[in-house]
Length: 331
Image (cartoon, rainbow, N blue to C red; front, side, top):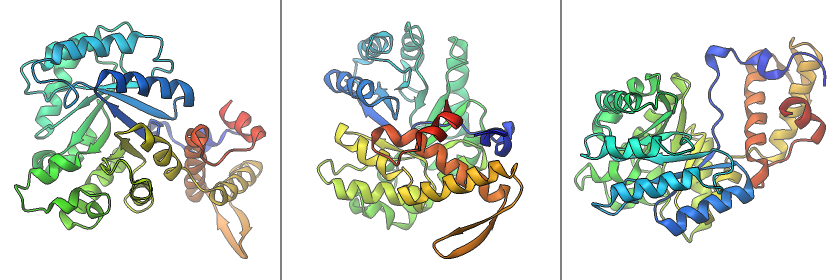
């Protein structure tokens, strides 16, 4: 392929969003953390691994957990540098000590997850502590799971150190003191309750408004692959999420595949972008499925983003790009 590269033609530098893997896998017990890193080494960087020093750490054992995480970050199983760490809430007595241990690891974490901020002030405070420890180059992710954080979701997403916001389903439901039924924490129920849906939409909108990545929360039905797949597809196709949590290795591939474009979608996108590139990004007519449509740079951006998502998910069973186009566009 010749001509201006699609990313150069279609994406302004100011609007560029970090292209994070579509799956964020959490593990906090040593055998599961090790297994997760091994699986990532096998599949490639199609999913991130987040090593958990909050819910995954024994109460009172946060320092030992942080030291173990630092060893795993520096170890040979961290092949791609796509391993993050969930810290304690910023109000925790050992927040700074744990962050310092993780940041002193021979290999930096890909990001640090901040759980349970009560609002923008907690994110600012955590960022100041992390920056004072020499972590100013490490992206920050935040979990929106409190009323205050949801109320200030747009302000948190606008913070320059934030790369992604995640929705903390179970803590958010629990914060309503029984006013939201337990069924709203189920794979299907979380898409029906109005307060939960409102929270999800607010987070996705805040992220897209500020060029950050919205990450959908958990499905706890570990043995129900169909429920997971339905939830992942709804998060991606209906609520605007571009990333989702996994809490069991068996959930990783279904999430990646649910967030991957279909083969038909990819075929149309490839045709349109190839024709647009050949036309030097002027408007084109494209016929597909009996319909003749006009496309220009507004729709080109959509189809290019779809192609980029296909490239990020192909290694885990998503739709495959033709080799000549993959080489031309992704090297």
